[in-house]
Image (tube, rainbow, N blue to C red; front, side, top):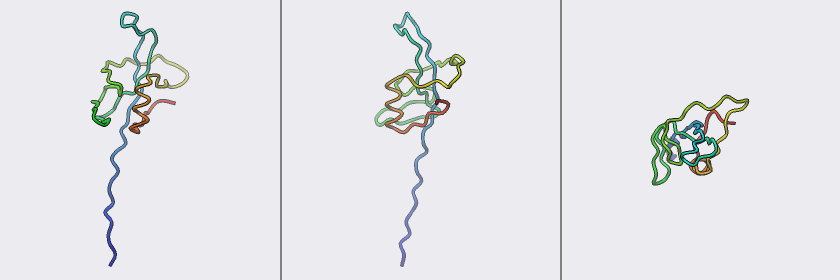
Length: 94
């Protein structure tokens, strides 16, 4: 007799996009920054992020990024680290 192995479905890969946060001198942000904004709910170990929230924990709103020749890159170090650790696919970035 042969044993049948049950194939387990892989969990869906969470997706996200790049969100723009403009500079704000009153909030001590001197530079524009780009964050990873989730498209659906994402579990990051003990943390959970809702859709439209950045991986580092900032809530929107996320205005449109300024037009440029290339797609924006994620500049938030916390978002980049969490995206690579938890294998979040970022769409719309180069």
